[in-house]
Structure formats: C-alpha cells, structure tokens
Image 1 (cartoon, rainbow, N blue to C red):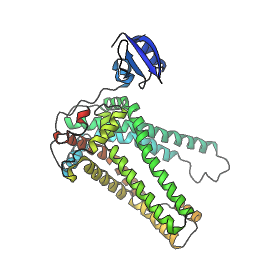
Image 2 (image 1 turned 90 degrees about the vertical axis):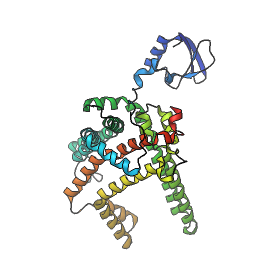
Image 3 (image 1 turned 180 degrees about the vertical axis):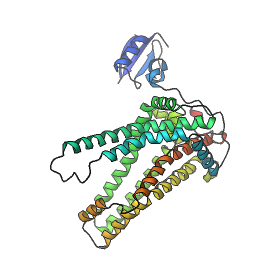
Image 4 (image 1 turned 90 degrees about the horizontal axis):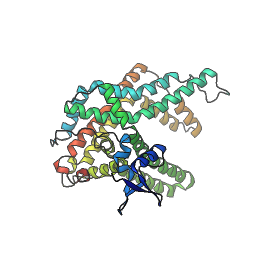
Length: 370
C-alpha cells in the first residue's frame, strides 16, 4: 500500500494519513468499508473495503474452488448428485439442521400452556417462559446465516472428498456470518416487503371500492405481486453461493447472482439456470406441502366450514386460531423431524446447480466478473 492516503467521507476529505492511522481509525469505527481512499499524488478514489491490509479480519477466505468442471448433466443428474452428497455428508448436514431447529424446539417446549392473551397479569413462571421463548426465537434467527454458510462449505468439501471436521465447519461458517446475515436481511426483507404491500393494497381495494371495479384492481395487484416475486426470485437465485463460495461482497453477490440466473439464453429453456432453479425450489415446496398436509388440511376444512355457515370474520378468525389437529400427534412430529433432516437438500442442490451453471456453456454469466 501507499505510505500516505487521503480519506473522503461524505464529500469531505481528510489527511494525509499513514496506513497505521487508517487501521486505528478502522478499529475506532471512524473508517468503514464504504469510505474512499486516495493515494497521495494520484487522482483516483478507491473504496476502503477493497484493501485487505486494513479490513483483512472482516473478510473470510473464499472456499477452495471445486476441481471438477461442469459435467453437463441434466436436472435428474443434479438431483442424484445432491442426494449422494447428502448421504456422504449426513453428519455435517444433520448438525447444521439441528443448529437452527433446536432453538425453535426449545421455544415451543417452554411456551406457557393455555391462552395468555386474556390473562390480566402473567405469573412469574409464565413471564420467564415467554422471555425464554423470545430469546430462543432470536437465537434461531441469528443461527440461520451459519446454517446457510455451512451448507455451502460442507457441500463443496464433501463433493471434492476433502476431510472436514464438524467444529472446523462451524468455525468457517461463523466467519461468513456478517456478510450472510446482511444479505439475509436484504433478501428476505425484500420478499416480505413486496408481499405485505400488495396484500395490504388488495385488502384496501376489496374493502373500500365497489366489487365491480375492485375485483379487477385486486386481480391487477395480484398479478403485480406475482411478477415482482418472480423478479426477486431471479435476482436472488444464487446469492448464497456467490457470498460464500466465490467470496464476493454484498453488492457483487447480488449482481453476480442476477447475471448467472439470466445466463444461458442460447441454450434450451429447460437447461437454463433460472428454470432449473425454479424446478428445484418447486420440488422442495411440494415436499414441505406433503409433510404438512395433515394440519393444513384440517385448517382448510375449518375455513370452508366457517364459510359455509356464513360466520362473521371475528368468529372465523377465532375458529382458525383454535383449530388443532385431532389425531396423529406422533405422525406430525415425525413428519416435522423429517422436514428438518431433509432441509439441507435444497441448499445442496443449488450448490450443485451453481457449479453446473458456471461451466463453459455459461461464460456469459458472472465468470467475466470474477
């Protein structure tokens, strides 16, 4: 690095300062990755985050690249390889699944029995249980980025036949937590935002506009919601792989994900990354639906029963809230456990698809950006 630098923060310039001063400013929080640096005597400004000499402790090393190239296998081959990787690395994937499932399980076990919403005051034991459940829910959310990063790392190591210990896997996954957590907030927040806004507008239209006009407006808003969700799905298809496997920062992960998802236009539609990713995600949705078919079916029965007797909205909401499975408690528990165990399969299949899509046939994608 140069001996002296100028620093630009929100249009204001400071300096010149040496490298040690920059490190001190960074430790104090006065220098962040978004600030710009300029070598003394030069004209170009460079983002401070591009200098690993200063921010090396915040950038985990990228995963060693896969030594195998794209084999040109179809969707069936991707699924077969995903199951093979899942079987060979079952121990690692089970640990990652339990890492996010145990906090939720503890929160459900510690939840106070009965309906506490109508109680005038919580008993001390119930208050502690509610607080513990809340912190367990937060812990589950905080561990989700570790699960995502761990799936990427374990899939590559198992695919390449490299030895990997469980503690080493967790340590490496934790190194990606800041980057993956920030991307989780942005990606999942985008999906939630663009789901809530159209639904809210549809409710406003249905409740305030005459049915003759409101129906068409509601259908238009619904079509817009489907379109924006499809756009988000396309743009975010490979963000996990680029954030962890390619070692890209937040901005480049999103850009490279969009480029790879839209690549392969010269190939048949069924072999493009976007369509393969859509099929893989759809298959997982079918699995989740089948696993939860019994409780969901009972809720649907209750809903249509309330519609048939023309119950008022408040009674319908109360009936849906009180609807509980009548039988099959152990079956539901077993199916839920099966869903937890199989959860890594979706991430594994997308890692395999990522390497398949990064082959020579897709050089128009993010290969040129790396």
